[in-house]
Amino acid sequence: MIEVNGVIKRFDGSLALDEATLSVPEGSVYGLVGPNGAGKSTLIRHLMGVYRQDAGTITVDGKPVWEDTALKARIAAIPDDWYYFLQATAREMMRFYRGFYPNFSMERYEKLKEVFQIDEKRSIRHLSKGMQKQVAFWLALSCMPDYLILDEPVDGLDPVMRRQVWSLVLGDVAQRGTTVLVSSHNLRELEDVCDHVGIMDHGRVLLERSLAQLQDNMVKLQVVFPDAMTQVPPELPVLHASRVGRVHTLIMRMNAQEAAERLAAYSPMLVDAVPLTLEEIFIYELGGVDYAVKDIVL
Image 1: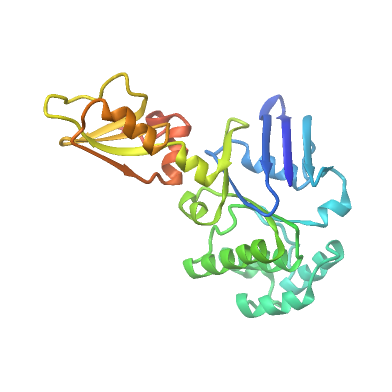
Image 2: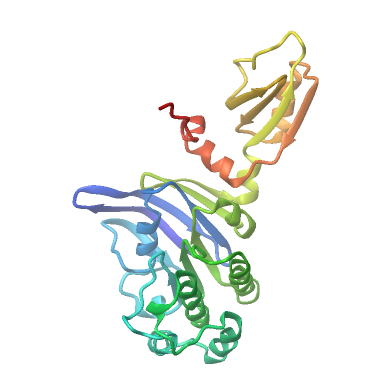
């Protein structure tokens, strides 16, 4: 289990992490989402042991990550800007990884060679961005990690390879109990792979829940009120409302049953609950329509 409690980090007086707190259950796929500058990559670098927090604690399996070589040997990471030695080939980087990861599996490395089909003797810097990302996954998965930390992991991969990579990662979760923390702006993709989600903004984790709980805590309803009612009753706790013709679309922070019961008092002609996407939950948890796309008149 990954535990982050009250972590504070400043850079040149600027607060990057403001008492950030999150918990990643063992064997889960945890999606960390937030706007640009929210502090996601900074938090990930702390989990990797690259940065040391100014205050608070960061533990994996109850042990602090900072300067714990044995613990870091159980954690593999693919940052957004993946590092490799200049002029290094995939095979040379493999030898480098083997020196740090005692569980590195040459058997798996050879098997994954068939999946990624990249010339392991070719300089990585001469590969395309997508092929470089494939090499990163090839090496990270060969490390047989207990914890896999990913920052924008499939950026640059084509749709087929994205599906292939997620299949490999989720296979490790199911078969080996690997714990995965993934940060991405592709919320539609996270919705398919994550079972827990944390929403981060301004250096803090605003909320974290299982995806099912998150979706059950907010509802989108399409409602048609009686003819005499043209406006949404002001006493309803509506986060956002829009209207097309007579159909009102309401976003409410409650489950569908509770929302239907609240609306029943107004004898609506139609009440239809529509599933919310993770992207919609993200937008309205971060401030509703004020955070949504704005129309600018030039």
